[in-house]
Amino acid sequence: MAPRSPQAGVLDLSLAVIVNVRWSILVLLAAIIPILGCGGSTSTSDAYDHFIAAANAINAGDKETAFSELNATIESSPSAWAYFERARIKLDRGQEQDAIADCQQGLALDPKDRKLLWLSAELKKPAAQRFKGRFAKPPA
Image (cartoon, rainbow, N blue to C red; front, side, top):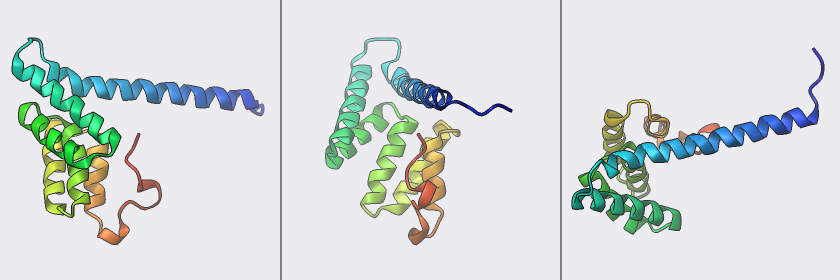
């Protein structure tokens, strides 16, 4: 077998980045589409507003606002993403059993959600063994 050129490695990396970006867009769309629904009702609009506010608060590091908006998102239009993010905040607050419950509820909506599966598996480990090595961060 002939050796691979350095350009082949760059191409592989570029393709991996493109696939990751496309996957992230699909995950976001999968979370938003149920919230948007088909009609223009106020409840649908409110659900969308809470979803966007939660995402913005998470990105800004404002966990209190994020928690409040995630609660509203879950109440109006539950999604695996909202349960995952709320479970992480609950875990940060020391509410481990509530975080586990959120993982279970999110997995009931989407049994194959990789981030919920990861968090659920980490929560089954003793606290001192969680989030180590390759399991330190959720899957991309």
